[in-house]
Structure formats: structure tokens, C-alpha cells
Image (cartoon, rainbow, N blue to C red):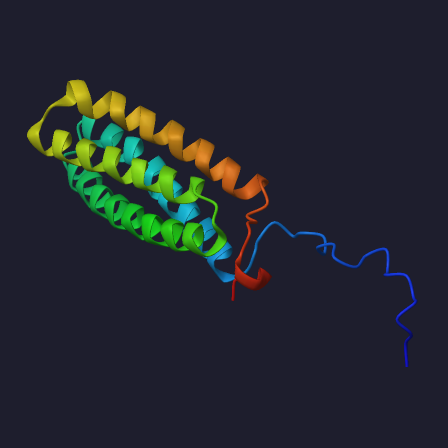
Amino acid sequence: MTSTDEAPSATAGREAPSTGVTGVTGGMFRAAVTLHTVVVFGQPVFAGVYLSGDIGGLGLHALGADAASFLGLAQAIVGVTYSVRQRVWWPALTSLLLVAAESVQYVAGMDGALWLHLPLGVSLIAGLAVLFTVAWTRPLRGRGRGGSDA
């Protein structure tokens, strides 16, 4: 039996040390960003194969564009879910901006507007590299409901 006079523990009210992920949606966000980044980083390789004279590279580049678009949408869904649950808005905002830019790039590539397609592709790779770094180096924590993300 404890008395009501006891001083609170030194650790009472403090969070446990973070491992960097606040549950399932934080891990899902990291996984989505990682897969999306890997696929997008493959796109210049496939374009280079095509530009070096192998016509099959264009088919791989188109397939990679479809995969990148799908993974971008998946990342946006997970990012919005994480943001809503944790009340931290940067994952949703960055993911939605990347999807918008990726959509413009996809259309520019299909229309042959290389003046837009190439610099936007470089920007997307840079943006995903930064997002990947932030997602894996920052603790994905927020003010979750009840402190649980499961």
C-alpha cells in the first residue's frame, strides 16, 4: 500500500526514450518513403539506358514511372494517415507536394516536354532524398491520441 504523501517518481510523466518510430503508421511512412525513393532513383538509370541506344530502356522507364506514381500515392495516403493520427503535418504536406510534382512530371514525360520533365525529375530526386533523410533521422513522434499509434 502506498501513501498519498510519497513524492512522485523522477520519471513520472516523462516519455520513454524514443526509438524514432511512434508505432505502426510511423514505420509504414518510413517504408513507403524508402520504396518510393528507391524506385524514383532508378528512373534516371532507365532513361540513361534508353539514351545510350537500347530501346528497351524506354519501356523500363515507363514501367518505373507507373511504379513511382503508385508508390507516391501510397506514400501520400500513409503520410496523411500518420499526420492525422499524430498531429504532425510535415509528412502529409511533403508527400502531397511530391505527388503533385510527380503527376506534372508524368504528364510532361508522356507529352515529350523534356524541358520540364528533366529538371522536375532532378527536383523530385532531390526532394525525395531530403525526405528520406528526414524520415529516417528524425523521431517520427507527435501528440498522438493517448500516446499510442497502434
